[in-house]
Length: 335
Image (cartoon, rainbow, N blue to C red):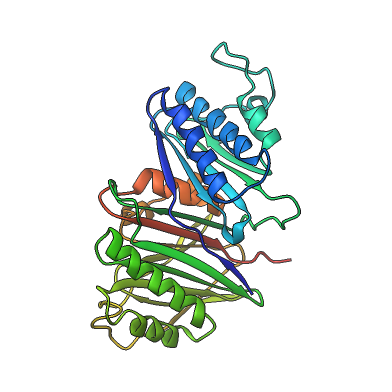
């Protein structure tokens, strides 16, 4: 059994050149909290600095996210912008190539330092980057999951969280949105997370009942559960956690939870089954992500790998007044 879960995501808006140093400081601090050894905190700072510098020079509305990877494997730095995009990505990754008269080592340095680097760009839309720095000797985490957990503006703790548990190639994804925000909502989310891990093997309606009992003396929460099998998925939801399944063709399924509050007045939970084509991407998100994004997603967005899709949704569709969590997971491809 493997578990994927991460804590709150740090956010740095790159709206001025002074934010470059802040991005480096945040990345170094995250690496130290992850107890990355040796020069790795400095490497994390360089990654963040170079990526933030690119945003400052070339992009508009740029943002940088820093978070710990699950299982203590390292950290991930993601960026998203509304810039012009890169017309020739391979040239941009080459040392010496520049469009601003600088030395042109930014993305080249990032590609050398990062353990894993994923970039998607579209002219006129912008660029998304995921740079991971992982511990030597650790297995690389799959690129078929993406996760961001963002506290409401002005809050240090997030009342949302999420996780994925995989057992025998069956993934169970979970997102919880504690009512309200701040420390009390964060306590609810952590109670639900512990209960989820203790009972994640159970059928989804029973698992929801376990969560309901765990939250009986709390302010309650909305919960979405999705279990991905080889050719189908099962869904069970209570409240306003949104769940969608889509492919490059478009959105195939939109799933909404039953009315109610887990921990307070919860109806008898029901599970629904949907067909699942190989390579389908499922997205679960709290109401801190505006659901309008799914009405007409672009072809570019539909083809994003899960880590970059999570960043795109957080960057383009987040309400800063509420906690926001988005979890993306891709179904197993046909071998």
